[in-house]
Image 1: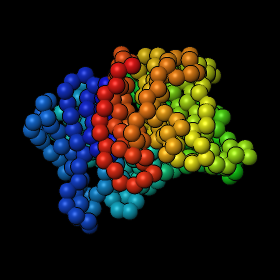
Image 2 (image 1 turned 135 degrees about the horizontal axis):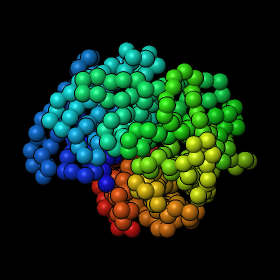
Image 3 (image 1 turned 90 degrees about the horizontal axis):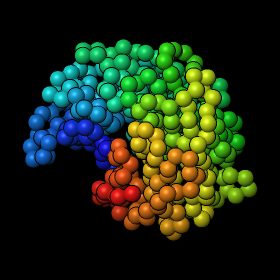
Image 4 (image 1 turned 60 degrees about the horizontal axis):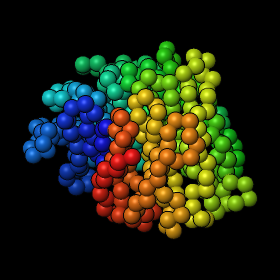
Length: 363
């Protein structure tokens, strides 16, 4: 499977040896963001392309299509914009788009760990989330076409967590929080063709039962290649009278019905720690067929909860668990579901700056 590093600045293609890096050079206020592509054996740099548009740019993330022929990267200025997207081919040719010029609400990515974006496996479409809005764009050779967008309203809180899009870009999923302060719930919105624009067109609302005084911004979401299955991990705090324990919820649903009725295939619901409020869902990754997924968590300081859990379709108990020295920064499961890679911090993520290592696990 593809691998994303813990700092969300590198990515690799699934089906070919293609590795790209999103990096910064220089010092503030003259930092420059660029995209760099390496040779298959990582021994040399094939090309590097700088972002333009402002003097100080910050990384927003990077993604590669399954065949390595389409690369998208995001960068934003200090402090809140503009939000730029660079679209490149495997040779480094392409163009740059100012998403903020297309829509003033697209000022900065609002994803978990900066991951408010997703590229379809075939490289044809990208799903982008800001603090107030979602956009689905079709990527051409020289320009982009807006297929649909929506913005939060009424009792829909800000978009939260990461987003996901299926292989051909025909269906996408995104989490959001909804409700009133002190009694919120997390939902999963499914976006399907034909896309539209305006107030959020959530055709399908999947309520994950994580009530609490507030909902964490740390969610994970994934979708199968054919768009029929979605997995969603959420973290809730202050549940009931217990305001010191956070709750971890992981759900896999069949969302294939055109009426967006769903079948809950599994649901894991458990206290995430012992009163520390330090655990949260960081990332979920699913096999293309939707039969297995792996979830990565921060864990807790007392090691009450495992940092990695593997689930099979239809089973609400983990098929396997793994404990690590520190929090999970990122992970990705292989297409056949027999291995996964994880970027692991050397200590808990709440303890500040730390180094990380990349590990490969057999399931």
